[in-house]
Length: 54
Image (cartoon, rainbow, N blue to C red):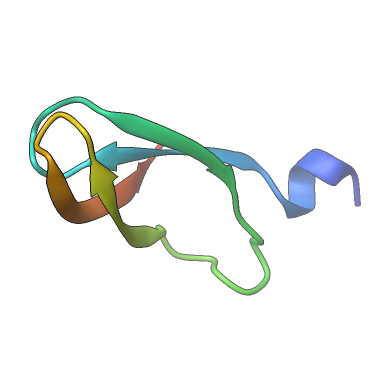
């Protein structure tokens, strides 16, 4: 497998509606579904869920 197939770059968009995004890599074997992480949103100034967008 190529590097980009196993660990693709994904964008995590804030669920608070601020439009803030994080960019990260994920392992497709361990997390085949959409990724959800709780991270800090500097626009909303609090921790919110960030979901993977395609």
